[in-house]
Image (cartoon, rainbow, N blue to C red; front, top):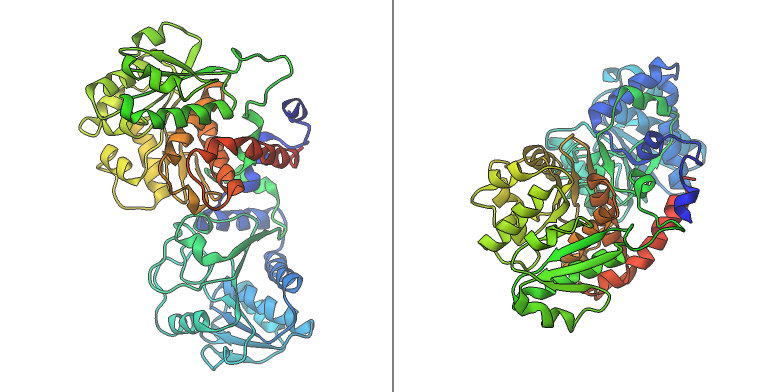
Length: 508
């Protein structure tokens, strides 16, 4: 029923819904600010609103107490002056330390400094000695160099204090674009950012230093997106909910797709069963494990709703056009047989997920894999497999590497990890944030491959299917909690689907 309710009933376009959780690197955020000003919104008002939103978040969480506000020489420092003024007006004791002199401030930051009625102390004048709260407004998301000198000393002292630490936009020392840290960085308890998150809020290690992240509305209109064209998103339901294959009342199992999971020899069959069960739970109408004939009985004794077929290769399976999606690689073995199966499936143009051995068997000739790709192919490497498949893509962030891999291969790339990145050849990318550390367990990736394959079988576009699969995988693990093993993940997909429905309804 939910599929019938969605459509365009929200009154929002697909782009508007997707942009609820887009990620704006610093350059695009500066562009958003400029476009807002062009639209008639005062930059002074934007800064006032930013400071007010930080104060609102603090006052909604914490009891009044002594606050140290550490201000830098730019607009981040201007936000800090607003915070200091509003907290002081609300009766909170405030000490403000400024890096540099007031005379060096320019534009909106200078204006806000002029409204501050308290003392402006040089940064480092023991502002932290009795602080219950530290507001870090030293440097913003665009910082691209390590903190040094006095700012680094102050952040080091702040991290050792018992005070609650609140970061303005991003913790000082963190790159908002890459999530990378060079040198010291504030370990924030709360980070308040504005309009949209930055990639650095979601990529590791940046996410670990942000604490709770709150993104506030400061008055920038959504119309600015027309001039920005976002290509980065946090992997949230809003990105793909309108193409998720919600079952319709008149559907049947054949309409929901038939996924084939390739299996290797007898001793390696567990990975294929995990993938197959993940696919069935994700909604595929039928799932078949295609295996060497000697492994049929072993699979059949462990599977009920999932069919088993003994084959020598994929040629016979591909004769049936109703088998519209494939998962190849989990437990298949690194062999000519695995490589031939992959190439046969790709030649057929069917949707496919290639994982584990399905990737590693092309380590000596990745170009032969990329040349065979037609469409709707998802690669799901972890870091080691990615390096073997893309030896020339080195350095950079996970976001940059995944995007480069997608462009080079012509495939959707899911670079797996605690901050999995899903990238498309056209430049779109999503960063996943709901994966708990309990997913670091044997067989977890096999289930993920199956979930994505099950969504592909139901006709979901490859990029969105990969994003949705990664999200369902993480949400299932979150719902299970501690003690997770791979066999638990498929059994908690139904609960994750309920969560998906609930969040999807919030956009209706």
